[in-house]
Amino acid sequence: MSALLTRTKVRNALWNYGKAWETQNPNLILSIFTEDATYQEGPFAEPMVGWDAIRAYWEKKVVQEQRDIRFHVENILIEGNVAVVEWIADFVDVVKNEGAHLYEVAFLEFSGDHIKSLRETWRSERTPL
Image (cartoon, rainbow, N blue to C red; front, side, top):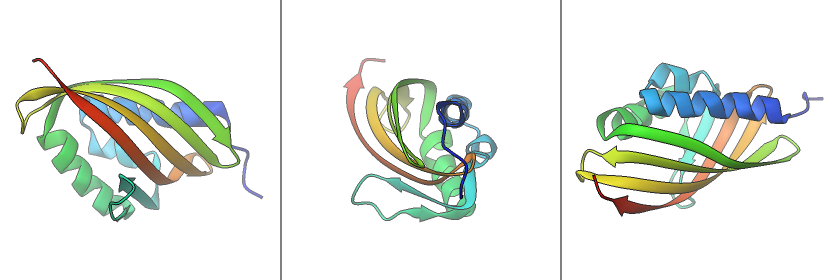
């Protein structure tokens, strides 16, 4: 039987997720995922599988294409080993040279203290620089 998923475990993972995003740190983001985790950016995207794929995505999307990132968790709901999380993020989209205000809902399936599956859906709007 797997350990019970607690708000503390979810909050710890989300704190590290936010810190990894804000500091653009691929090593820190990998520390919250199982080695074989899946990361799906949107309901119609193919999931990325494993640390190498997640690192490559993070290095391109976050490190190369974003800056001045701010991350804030709004709500957490837990059912079994899944947390449903709402968060808000603001950042500069370097590629488009504009600000972005992002609202996201993510489904995080845990194995112990680590995320084994992240499925996200989000909506963003432009903001002035």
